[in-house]
Length: 336
Ligand code: KG4
Ligand code: ZN
Image (cartoon, rainbow, N blue to C red; front, side):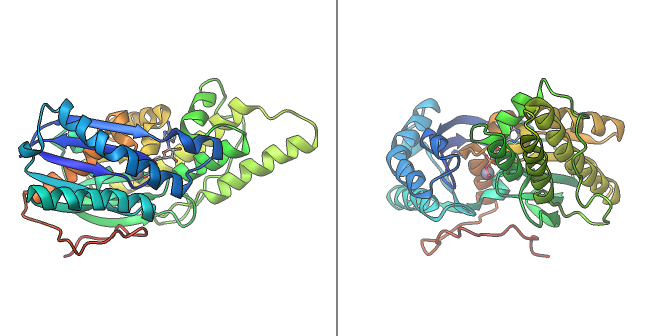
């Protein structure tokens, strides 16, 4: 079965083709127009999707060595995300489904991130804990079996990626902040500044990153007032370590409490190399299987949406033409 996936929830226009075992094509076009604004401008994002979507889908089919007639199903993100951006993808998918007369399904973007790991690693030992850390979400999920979720905790304010983006802005680094902060952190000392680790003492799986971001802001402002130049590398390394410590401690606590065999990472933030290395090392110590998607499958891409679509379509799940976009679609416990 060949499934075409479409992802346009934010500022990445992406189309992918997957079959049972592998990714046959995964084309991702990043919109550079947002860089000069220091964040995504929703109207520009939707307009860029409208222009890029058709050629990107054609390119995905071409890379997969296929024709529209070779497709057996379609999958598209219908939320959460920017309304105009989601509409561009959903309308395109409905048009294709209508003309090709094949089944299609709307996918929750968060589920896409979670199943990204299945694109390059099919045999995961469940039950598992999955940490989803992206620009819009930070969620800890207990996965009894594939597509069966129980939410253990989530951020009560900023998402981990949002904290990276805001700290980058405070330091005058380019958007998106994660890669810039990681780069500066490489030459910094992670023990140089002791930034706060929120909610670690609390007996729950929620996260909070807004205090950490404010601590960085106050630190930079106080140096500025004293006429001292901010030590960028040390700030980035210390901030990054504070984020990793919180994410890791909560994740491994959950693995222990729920007696999971595996820990799965998901979302744009887990592209971060020191984060992956910290988790890998901790997993080795606790004798837990550790899985992280390849870097290009961590940030937004259509292969993860196509994979989620594949997994649901083979269970005969379908969407119908009444489906609308849901910009604030939440990710909740699976039924029963
Ligand atoms: O999953 P994603 O592509 O989009 C959302 O669904 O939000 O995640 C984007 C987020 C951004 O906040 C970006 O700064 C962060 O992932 N990110 C990183 C890295 N690469 C991307 N954060 C830390 N380190 C990175 N290398
Ligand atoms: Zn995402």
